[in-house]
Image 1 (cartoon, rainbow, N blue to C red):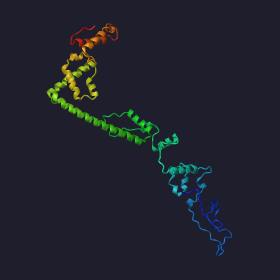
Image 2: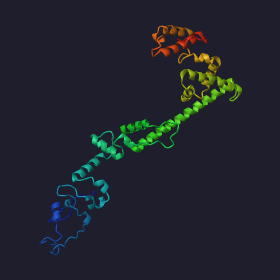
Image 3: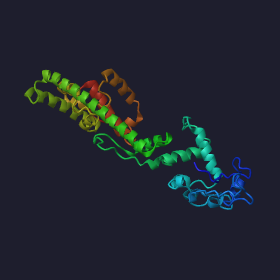
Image 4: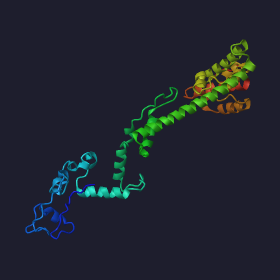
Length: 331
């Protein structure tokens, strides 16, 4: 590293040692008056000094009158001409010296990114790394090859962006972590689906031992019984039970259809129709107890009560559970 003041060596009047900076600045290239050589008594010849103009730099060349460094001051030195990007932020010699001192102190010491003198220093450090100022600044994108059957919504994006900001990840790091997460989830889903398909395959094979081969007369007859039970449950609940079964992923579950087929084969449509939602396991005794309580409800007898029609319908359901297919007049 070059010095900002250059010192030139010059012999003093006695011919010994190096001169002081002040002497060097005033050194003359002419012989001093009366100077004699020991042998001839003639004046010493003038010393010849080769000075590199680029090194003949003093404070006045790079420092303003107020002590600040001049613009592009680093171009005054051969070794720093190409370092403008790094050196342009130094405005004073003091600042440059402090930076050099801090750098020397840091040599050989591990950098601790969790230990900053203040929040401003921490913020500046992470901004230079490329960490966005806000979570929204990440602008995370859907990963390439994202499975179509997996959900990718804004809530997931927001969660990843907030976590990335919390831990000061760069944009590239945040996008990479999100991609890795969804790739892991996709792999897990595919593995789970493969296992489920294998279970269903085994169950269908077991079911075919009871129902016969798929597509056979026996198979289709059992399937019709299951469909009859589904239709009856739909009529009772007012819902599309087939769609409900599909929405929870059980539309291809052999165990469920074995159960539905048994229900459809052993329970008549009228019996199913007489059972309200949630009463499939109600005994006659339970129905009788509820019926006795219902008879004490004034809404059952008051046609102007807003709950009258509901109570009448419930009374009819309970009577069918208690007495089977017998027909009863409504109030």
